[in-house]
Length: 272
Ligand code: DGL
Image (cartoon, rainbow, N blue to C red; front, side, top):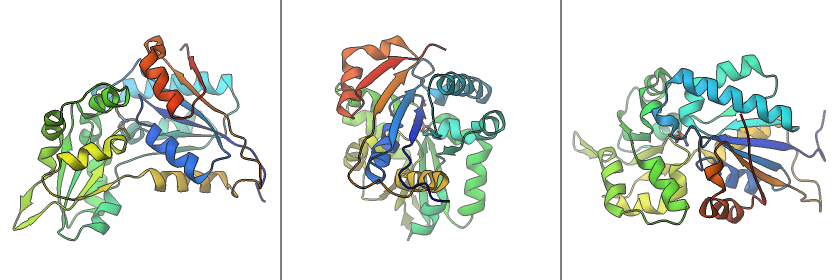
């Protein structure tokens, strides 16, 4: 069966602005797909929440969203959530979900020195899911998993147009740069969707050049596959991009400006 000509509405969900890294890529690969961006900013940062709290919050948001509008698929554009909620969401809701988890496999394939690092939230670093990924795909690499306590927050600050100290970024990412048995880290997994949004700052704060792995393109390819997306219909690039937040502080002018700049014309509050 072909889905050519079908118009899709995909929800990209995160605790905050991080999912914009996936939304940007989705717009690149499929400009005719409408995006409903949803940030559970009342729960931000997820990196400090317990798994059960994340499951409860995301399930609540998803149920309110799908009662409100027609959604064809949801991307959980948050490693901290995806490493713990996918099973619960799939068993409760019938629409397709695509998650984002640390790109350990591509990193292990790409490294030349066998020394790789993962930057992620404390929650993602602690997960059995992440430990299993490392064991399964990077067993022969030297892996340094770095819990970044402030980095997602610093990304939000930067995106909202406020200054971020270069020294604070260095402090967060420097444990990822290690020398081990005469070789050094050459590949760093961006295990939080916020981080690709400040890639340039990460590059400037790096003591030596590395490959930073941003999983967004692969995640979007997976989504399009799941949707059986056949490419944009000729001449009609008719997408509507809306954003919703769970905390009314999101309607402050700086944050509203971020969404406008990212192509989301309509910003509303989702009451849970
Ligand atoms: N963007 C989220 C992730 O990918 C997490 C940020 C947070 O809420 O701590 O992990």
